[in-house]
Image (cartoon, rainbow, N blue to C red; front, side, top):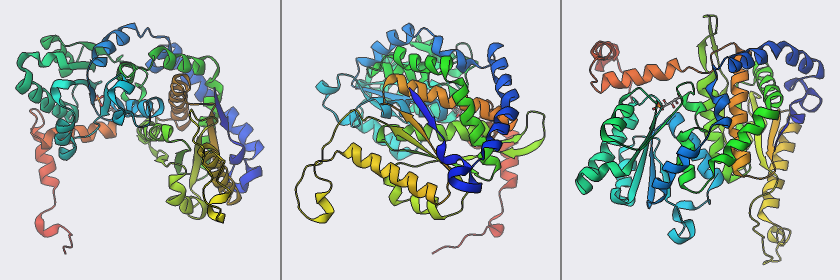
Length: 455
Ligand code: PA5
């Protein structure tokens, strides 16, 4: 279902920039307590995401049917409440989903806002008319300012057009008991689904957070969960090995982890992984309270596009990266390149397929990186299906949990994100944050102390 190929991360291929057989055996043995600690936490019920493959998605499917009847489904949310949906939608829906004719799509157009850019949001009201749109507002905490602002804007637009019937256009996904959104769902009797309290935002793709929008677009949640279940059943050791390798190379100076899918459908998996890896591992404190400032910077790239943008740096710049390809053995569609011109530039391409060209591009990049002693690995799936997509997400979540323990940091909190959330509340005048607002104002440099050049 999913292969982890780390041949080109070994010293036999990339010299000192890889791991020797002896280092590898030692790292696997030294990391074993971290593996055991994750498994113990999991058995004690502390890692909610591990239970997700076993969930019953029937309520999700029921509510998804409501959403499926609309022309547009717009997800209001940010970060972990949005990125998984974008990743799965890119992986599993038609590449031009929102542009397809309604009779071909037979499901809503899907928009995931994931920001509060005024031009983007105001523009969205024009291209997806509120009276033809269902808004799935998603926030685990139910308190996030960006999501609340999005909701206020769209509910206001709905009320103007539909009055009290605005409630027929909003579905809530949030904590089962707490937070503003849960209270709103109760008060306004909105259809709602829970995000399990023990599942963190960036680990929540396989909850209603992403399963509902995907199900509304025709993806069977059970198939995604089956892929994740396969990882739980037989993929833990592989996820552990991947984590050990990433951390071993991080310790050898590979401070950057590039994820480079060679499939457009997996581009947003790399974006989702970027958040998972960054927020989970980027930590000041160790589990025993010391200042450690750990974390490996995750970067997204896309083959073949970024061969013409980033590959120069990856091949000849600082040797501080581990590059991971996401490879699809078989694309879902063929796209033959016809013969046409006899010129040298074209003649060798005629009669081949674009998939063949993309695979050759990947092999070429892999070969160049390896020749330049740049460690690289490949995560390979046979094809992109709901099962392999579910497996991939669950695999990377598991790998992140192991990596957190290997680094001795808490992979499940995000104090740095919370700090920025509170600063936003203060700057926007939320009650209870007056002191912080005052503190922020007092820290702002005086005009005379600012360094700005103007043209
Ligand atoms: O992973 C996380 O916890 C964060 O990225 C959150 O998902 C993000 O901050 C949004 O939070 P919420 O879902 O509570 O609105």
